[in-house]
Image 1 (cartoon, rainbow, N blue to C red):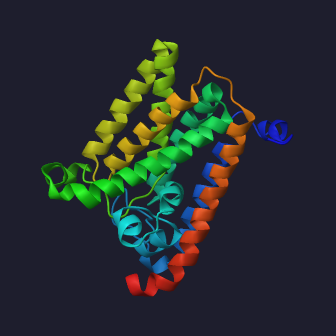
Image 2: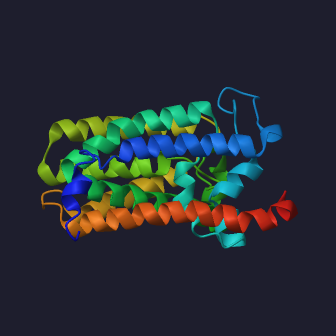
Length: 260
């Protein structure tokens, strides 16, 4: 890390990541409300203070439409920092505060950021692929109402959060920690049941994020020490995520009047 590793670690055990995610997500949530105040929805409990579809698209919501129809592939990164309502962001940020420090403690802050970023990509990509291709087979048609049909437009930190859950579950397998395994299995079952009974939950993004986090954790090996290049890759991940949001806004403004 060219001498900067010590300074980066001084940000805290979680690389200052929890504060960054919470602060960045809140700032983007406020921005999506302010950019289109007339489109704010307040119809139901989970849609209370929900930004308009136009605003969420502009700032980088992902899904089948942005990724496959419009070629906005970078939204696989930006979508994890956007939220569709007050309860949505409050719930996700509370889980980030629990899972991110735990993952950083076991894997190191750099590898935690890598897991989080890759899980965002795999989660939203999987949801987009399912919606693009699976509606033509029974799984997408029959179980779409359970959130298993993917999504044309999707967002939220829950996809990378499931990646952290997958990484923690792999840690329990790699180390034989029964306590962590039981905790993570309990979380996984609880979150899965919640996703199946609540409308509007993108369970395919959750599944894709979980698999992405679990597989990435296997490659990173939590029993091996974190290296300087892991921290460098983490910085690149954060920079790429910030650029994805900028790219979404810059490329979205000219076409927004023609889409909405």
